[in-house]
Image (cartoon, rainbow, N blue to C red; front, top):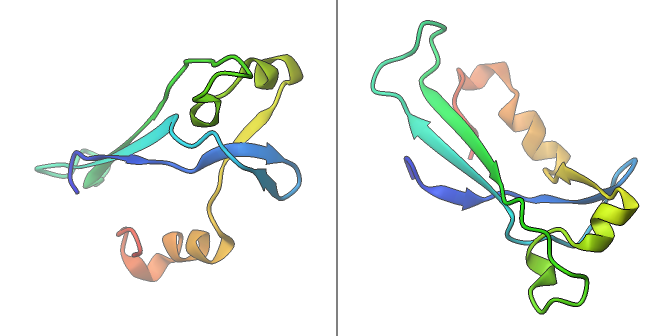
Length: 100
């Protein structure tokens, strides 16, 4: 999976804990394994990319990206990770590795 761009669930968000469907295809993440650790000891780089395309509300592909309505209303977006997975990713006993 090194250097592969993967979909990232960065979705419409209504605080405190409600996610609303979509957009489905505007956020991506890439994990790159470093050949040698950097000066801080990191062995991977993580890049996040967000497509800045805004679709009209009635566009056939409006479910893929933020819409003009999102812009008008100041819609919030957030990373949608379930709590148990967040806890596994932050466990110190993983030695810095990502949990499956």
